[in-house]
Image (cartoon, rainbow, N blue to C red; front, top):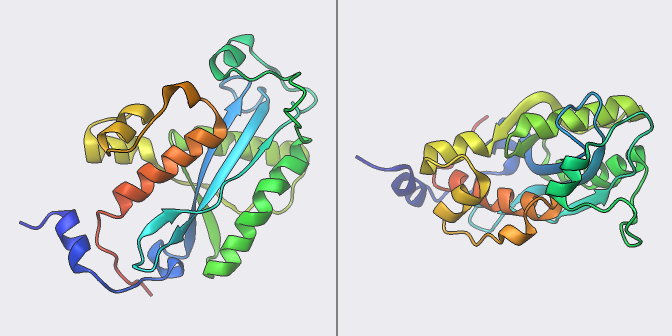
Length: 214
């Protein structure tokens, strides 16, 4: 019986991104926050990696776009969250942006990638993806941002994919099982976690045959 990997090697046709995921562009995202409740805790960091295709039509991580975020007025920060992430809100080089500006800083290149690949909408790829999407949706609503490129509720979750592919649901363990280097000292940085999640998603997705879809 053929494995997904065997089938992938047999499928040589280049499938454009616009037909790979039914018109969606996968964009890997990670957020760092002031707690677990998107309705009341602050968004503190946001990073996104729109995926690209190499010459063989395999998924590869694109350019990383990221912003540090000034906690929005009225939001809360649990000190325990800062202990986990190591974020110093008063760091002189943090160069944080207001929430709406931070969103636009990340959203603008995603919209450009959508146009490049002729995709209709971005779909968020994340590790515990609904957590990330929840904070993005809350920040969009709070700031009044009008050009959110993401689907409002659909996601691709690498917790599920890592569990199916490797029996591992923790990001560091799933990445290690995929043979990808992971530095635990850099974890809980939005940029680092996004880039590693992007590598993991591409590694898993590229094992499956690429099928052209109308």
